Length: 396
Image (cartoon, rainbow, N blue to C red; front, side, top):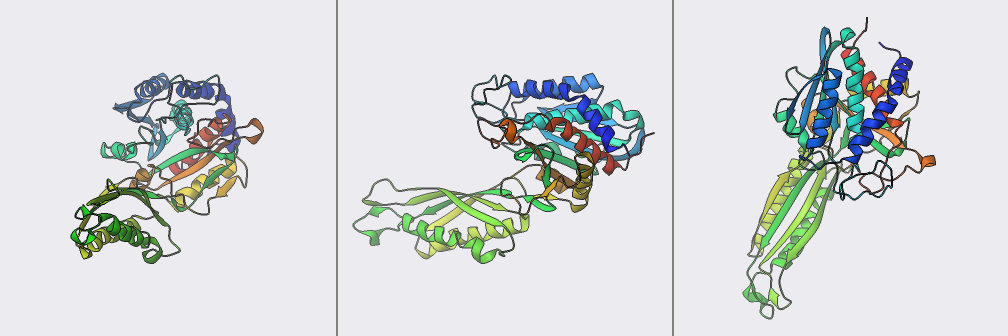
């Protein structure tokens, strides 16, 4: 195995190259499924390295084939930006009004290109294959699931998958992760309650959809507390409710939109069934009717404990002993790396990119988000070290 000090030096030596790449991507952000320039840029860099790749839409799958047979480890980076107007004032700020890399995907892409360069330059001594997954649309429709359907986990068959996300609340030089559930799943539930309209002065002649909706809401808000163990995690939030036209008319329809977050698919499916039963039975008991449209979003991100151990071992070598923060509880925010982890043993971790002394503390998805670019070579070294451990590789 390559000594950690050598990996750090290798990664730090290409820091200027990494910064140049990151700033170029940052200046030209693109929204999900519109990442044409970004994909062109990635493809050009891979060609410069002599790395073979296939492109489908704006998704790119690269391959660094070692000279010797072995396992295949996939490394993933998301490439899309957000519809946010940048207010950092940086000289490399977004050149596109109303769009910026406010979630660090420019850094993720840069780190993956850096890892690609490291492996490409040493492929003669590599046992196995490194697969490079440049994924579009993490912020929108979940590009990971589409890439999987298009076969990115096969030919060659992926054995393990690794991903990271920069986090400004962590200082440069630290990572954060968790065994098991790290992020929740997302499911959208659109409820409709139907009654019969009539004059408000004669409520007995109609069926009040607003009154029925009040009972439905109360019942829905009881689902998590009564049907989910207090040791598990779930939340159901009703974000919108619309019904009625004027004050003196009984409403004949009410619509509600909600989001359901859980850390297991089993809990999600159970709560969806319970919610469907509520919206069908309660309105019926008042003489009305109800229905729900269910839209399944991202699945829960569940880290493989053994792969997490590999990442932690690499971090303790590359950064320093004790550089890992253990996340106590999963986040109910979603991350579509979850689809890769559902297919293969994998690990996702948070890479520190904050630096309070430099004023780099703004949260992700904010207009002033930025990174300490020292995190770029560290991310490269960590991904390389973790992948090498998974390949059980020995260089000549």
